[in-house]
Every structure is written in C-alpha cells, then in structure tokens.
Amino acid sequence: MGQLIAGTCYVKVDGAQLTINGGCEAPLMSTKRETVVPGFYKETDVAPSFKVTALHTADFPLKQLIAGTDMTVTCEFSNGKVYVLAGAYLIEEPVSKGDDATIELKFEGIKGTWQ
Image (cartoon, rainbow, N blue to C red; front, side, top):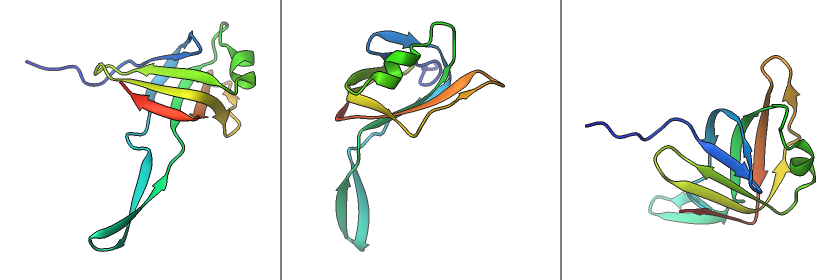
C-alpha cells in the first residue's frame, strides 16, 4: 500500500491562506555543521526561514506581507508535518512576475518549529 508523502502544501500567513504554485521549503535544522578536521566539527546558527512560490491572485494579502515584521507563517505539508515560523518578515525583495502571476516569497524569523 502506498503512502502519501508529497504534493500540495497549504500555507497561511497570519491566518490568510496563500494560493501556491509548486512546493515549499523549510529547514530541518537550526544550525549548520562544518567539518574542521575529520571527526571534529563546528556549528553555526542559521536564521529560521521559509520559502514558497505564491500566485498573485486578486485576494493576495500584499499590504499585509509588505508591512509585516512579526508574522506567523504556517505550512502544512502533504506528509502531515507542519512547520511554523514565528516573528517572520519578508526578505530579498520579492517581485510579481506577469508572465505566470507568481511571487517567490522568502521569510526569515525568530523561531522555526516542526510539529
């Protein structure tokens, strides 16, 4: 019997659901590890983040996203896992693409948790 592990994601920003195109990306770890010499490594903190490609629909919450500096971003993946990014804000100057009506959104925040 097969098990659903991938497919449609559901994304909400402060309660407003986004219509998305494609997948979502959320980090699994809050630190980055690098080998110093074999068997020894260092850890560096990584800013909690979340990436998604949204459709620029008529009800897209543009003003809310631009002004938001303490948003909560929630993504429900098809495998049942949920990623929550608290204290979120947009980074990297998102742009609306007229040819396919998409906006690539990248958020960073204070704390990202898997549930």
